[in-house]
Structure formats: structure tokens, C-alpha cells
Length: 512
Ligand SMILES: *[C@@H]1O[C@H](CO)[C@@H](O)[C@H](O)[C@H]1NC(C)=O
Ligand SMILES: *[C@@H]1O[C@H](CO)[C@@H](O)[C@H](O)[C@H]1NC(C)=O
Ligand SMILES: *[C@@H]1O[C@H](CO)[C@@H](O)[C@H](O)[C@H]1NC(C)=O
Image (tube, rainbow, N blue to C red; front, side):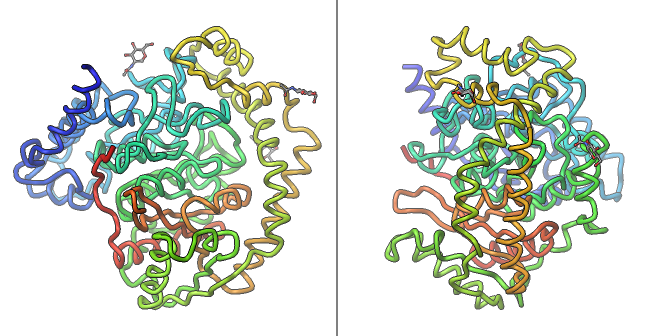
């Protein structure tokens, strides 16, 4: 009975006209940041109405899709403050994110009433010392922290058998297009929630694929920035070398407005953010939102091992070919059938060493994170393992084990073997993608879905996933544009022009 009700309630909401719960005639559901700011300006909408709309939608839809773990009890008050600030600001532009509700993946710390738990009961009740670096930037830009999004528990780093989108605290996250389809992970809740308009925008994190993959699978835009472009301070870590924070949004322009706010130097993530700061353009990323952004761009199409994996008559293969034609029509120069030098050596090396190095880094990084908490029931990876063992027959742990935790605990940290592997991955990145891009003078390479994320991960390369289509069953897929470190400006030009030319994304239909 309960499950029947929880199924019907969201359907009733979906069938009711969106106007009924929107601002004065303004339709919130698919609204972009730019449209919302315009509506604020014209007095057609308030931040309070926006927060109320998303809260109602979360209340109705979350029993079905489980994308949100907690809603911020202060969100309404923060929205009222934003409305007041705007009323007092006159004609002054307060910035794109002012008064905009944002959901954060539950591994991004907030020093407020919200918990920060990576989806696990082990961290419930822990107290963080301060906001994460990116949260500090969001708050000073006037964004409203709406709540915490669900994820694959511990960002998919507890056990290989934890399903995509599952965490102890909120259960199984669902793909809003086809409920039985894989939502991918680990930033599953962030992608599901923005796809289903449970927030304007969201943040996710990526160590290897965790922004790009759920963005592709839930038909939203995800940006995995150059390593260190956005601070990872206060983010529950896997690897300081590979972790990234990035936007997950319904449109490229929304994602770029979020990116503009979260990037920059942070003394608490000193080395990485100071190194990447040189890549940030003086006037930000917004000016690269150009409809003619494909004009003259050299884009490498990686066929072997990527696009050739799809049978030529499949929906995906046909759709990708159509998109390539569109890109050419818009002035891009597509270089077909390119192959990354040493591709198989690189793939083999990643297969053999990436996880091993991550496990060593995780042990050190998670112990450091836990030891810095103001209060916590768990203080080390050993404590987390004990917690999971103690509750292993309970629903909140699930039947999924903790093999990655155990292997990581067993590692002796980053030693000579791991350092050698890291050095080798750097060399292979130079000999692989970097060599290809320089030789062919590429602005980007394009790959399907999330097939390229390990190469992006070990090289610290940025990428943007843009909705590309829907399979026969209605489940979404994306295209990923990747470049070298600091290539965000041209990736944004390409992704925006591609999105504007193809206009693929449509709202989810919650098919069983
Ligand atoms: C955070 O967790 C505590 C339990 O430790 C709970 O009482 C509280 O409601 C949670 N906060 C939110 C915003 O849900
Ligand atoms: C940052 O860089 C300095 C100088 O290379 C190094 O000594 C230090 O260990 C680095 N800090 C971290 C946290 O990696
Ligand atoms: C722990 O490490 C030892 C030595 O490297 C190995 O023999 C053992 O299988 C490992 N155990 C686990 C659970 O990984």
C-alpha cells in the first residue's frame, strides 16, 4: 500500500499543470538560471517560490527516484534573505547564482544543519569543521544550499558490488527516464535530481567517471574540470590526485555559470588549486557560450575502441553519425578514425594499477579527512570497517560487503610502487592523448557516453558530457568532449554550440 501511494503521488504531481506551483505564470520546471534571473528581475518569481517548488517536487518524487538524502531546513529562510537582498540591490547585478537553489552530492561538506555522510550511516551525526571550499564560494555568490544529493555510497569506493546509485541512507536511486535503467554513478543523485527538476543545478564529484557517467545516463550536462580547477578541500576524498568537483545541470549555460563560481585558488587545497589557477580566464567562462562555437574547431573522433563498439544499425551509432554531420555543418573539422598512440598499453596499465594506487591514496586521504572532523563516531578507515561489520546484517549496510575498504586498509599507503605507477601514468598521458592532440592540432576529442573517463582521470584532463539521444527503451546517452588541461574555454564553445544545434534533452517521463 505504501509503495502504491509513493508511486501514485509523483504521478499526480506530474499530471498537475506546472503553473499551479510556480511563480506568477512563470514555469519553473525546465527553467534555466538565465530565465530565472530574468523572472526575478521582472518580479514574476521569488527565490522563496523557487525553493518551495523544489521542496514540493522532492517531497513528491523522491520516494520514487531517491535522489535527495536531506533537504536543508534553512533553505526557505536563506531564500527569503536572497529575495530581500535583491529587493535592496536596485539595478545592481548580484551574479548568476544569487538566489539559485543548488543540491550538493553528499560527500561535499556543509557547516550547517545538513549532514555530510557520503551516503553512509557511519558518518551520520559527524560534525565538519567548516564548509568545503566550493561551498564557501557558492554561499558568497548568493546560491542557496537546497540539500544533499544521494550517490553510490562512498562514491563507489566501499565495494565493487554496491550498485550504481545505491547508498545506505537513501536506498536505490533511479533513472527518471526509465526507472529500471542504470542511473550510473557515483554522482547519481545530483544527475537524477536536476534531470527531474528537483533543483535548478547540482554539484557532483569525479575520481574516474562519476560526473560524466551519470550525466550521460540521466540526459544532463556534466563538467569534469581540469584537475585542481575547483577546490577539493572539505570533500570526502578518494584520491587527492584524481578527485574533482564539477557542475551537473540541465544545460551547458547553467553548468558554465556554476563553474564560474566554484573555480579558483583555495589555501586549503594549496598545491592543486594554485597549479590549475593559471588556466582560469580573467573574465571567466561565460563568454565562451557561443552559438557558433563549433566554427573552425578540430575535433578528433576516436572510433577504435569507442564508437566502433556500437553496431552500425544501433540507435546510438546512427545518432552519433547524425551528430557528426551536424558538427560539420556548423563548421567543425572532424578528424575521423583517430587512435590514441599506445592505447592498449595505456588501457592495460590503467587496468592493472589505477585501482591499486587509488586504494593506497584513499587510505591516507580518508584517515586525514576523518581525523579533522570536529566530532565523528568514526575516526579511521579501520573504524569504518568495524562499523560495517557490526551492522552487516542490517538493511542500512545492504548485502554488498566492503571489499574495496578491506583492500585499501590492507595497503601500506603510497609507497615506491605506487609512486612509480603514478609517474608512469603521467608519462603515458603525455605519450597518449597529449601527443595525439598536439600532432593533429585538436581542440577536443569526442567519445561516446563515459568510455573515456579513465584517460581523463589519470591525466587530469577536463571533459563535458552533453545529452546526445535516447535508446529504443528511452534510456538516455551522452557524448563527451575532452581536451588537455585548461581546455575548458574551447570545450565550452564546442559543447554549447553542439547543444544549441541539436537540442536533444527532453524532461524525463518516469517509465517503469
Ligand atoms: C542530520 O543527522 C541527524 C542525526 O544525527 C538528524 O537528527 C538531522 O535531522 C539530520 N539533518 C538533516 C538536515 O536532515
Ligand atoms: C605541496 O607541494 C609541496 C612542494 O612541492 C610539498 O612539499 C607538499 O608535500 C605538497 N603538499 C601536499 C598536501 O601534497
Ligand atoms: C593483504 O595483503 C597481503 C600481502 O600483500 C595479501 O596476501 C592479502 O591477500 C591481502 N588481503 C586482502 C584482504 O586484500
